[in-house]
Image 1 (cartoon, rainbow over the protein chains, first blue to last red):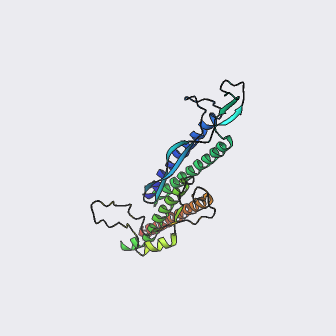
Image 2 (cartoon, chains in turn orange, brown):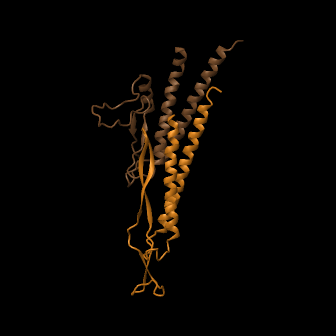
Image 3 (cartoon, one colour):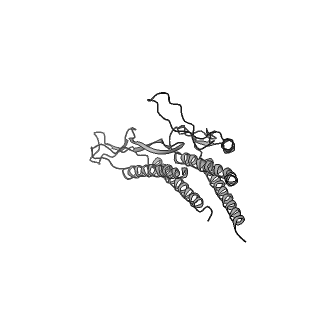
Length: 133
Length: 133
């Protein structure tokens, strides 16, 4: 039954989108983390999606990696902060909160879309199984 | 027996193609955020005509050496995968237009249900013809 592949496709998209949501959550949580475990300011992370053939024409999604945003840290003037440099500037994470919010909404809509796809496939299969009854 | 085969043959082929198209559309929706992914679809009319004409089917690559890879055998009988013409281009090279895909997905699901309903009706007709009165 080729319709079963729909579950593999939509399922791969669900896990990819939830991973994207995870990354957004950690970016937003660390939007003001001046120092990470390595002593450097937190860097925004992004997931990388790639298409992955499941069977025949069925193509799922796969997260090929999580990359760090290489943009320079945001510099904020705050001489009272213990992490400030000689000129009184503190290096803050390069997280763009607005971008992350947009990313979050996009991921959650994509997730909903794929749940809808799974539900439709389920309804169709149930109808097919009830043939002749 | 052959008459029954003929009666159901058309709808069996149509149903297989509908299930296949559902899979292709699910792949498009799953890859809505994958860079460089190209949306695909089948021309249902041409594919069904191909399937009814006995064309298509599993197309295997000719292997003349033991080192040759088998390749993913052809799709469902008659199905010809095409690339969708994009209406609005995006910067990352992705050609999935979610409105188009969702509309096509809903339409295809409805057509699938219609085929199932037709088959159910035929089964009921045959059953009542076979019943003793």
